[in-house]
Length: 168
Image (cartoon, rainbow, N blue to C red):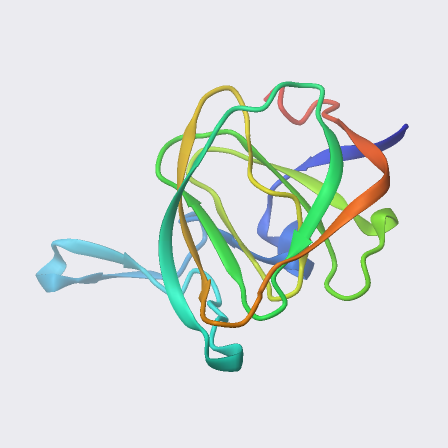
């Protein structure tokens, strides 16, 4: 069986696949007479291709059992897709670059706390993987009349290996 090592989710490591949505290091400033702090422009929402429009949804992820094998990946060729947890939740992100799917280029990340991700248009990713307990996510993605989801089944699954990443 193939192995895919899970990394910590950071802006730098995830940059080839989209944006990490988090407050740490984000541009921010006071608004509303100083009663609110605005954390500004946290991700690039890209959903207007072929007449698309933004959707705001809530996805409720059910906890997955470990060990976990990656056997399916999907992509949205017409728009980005952002996942923002509504609570302190541990979850996994498995991605591969946009274009022709290449399982050798997959990477896996452990998101936790209030970190979110925004998959860039066309980036391959595994469906939501929540660990330990149910978790709600605000999802910003594309609506419209055009099909916007491609799936690929891996010929041979990849087993996720956590090493030390979830021990912290």
